Length: 167
Image 1: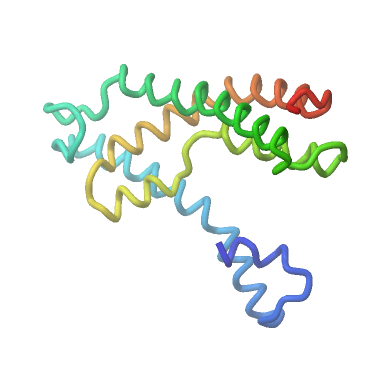
Image 2: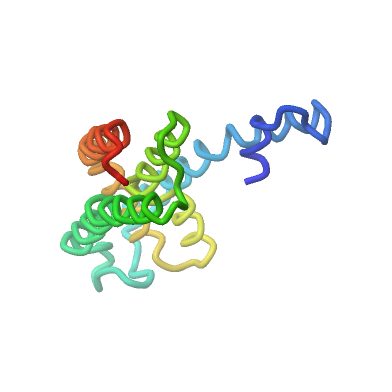
């Protein structure tokens, strides 16, 4: 998190060399994790991986009903929970209203609730040594499904934040 925040610091306390190094490291995090996800899927497929905890007995990974349930929970139910949470925050006075910055904050909070799971989950599964294939499948399926769902959610969130209907 510190490396990712390095470019946002106006006067870096560590000096320009360290800040530049941290910025380069932060820019490489997502591509490296994405490559790890792809290699996990490819390795498991190429070697016909045995069951590694939580998948089917034949080593086939996660069943489709489970993948669909995860997609529905993450890409349909969580955004609704996000709308309810932001609305409650606005009504309780915890989330500001009335300015462009406030609308942007509300939009970002809503957007955060509607995005697919982070690739860090795959990294945690790799470190734990359990469920790597299943996590890779969940992430791959939710990312593919999010192409469709994010479009609708972003449109709805823009309407809600511009019209001020969250309060």
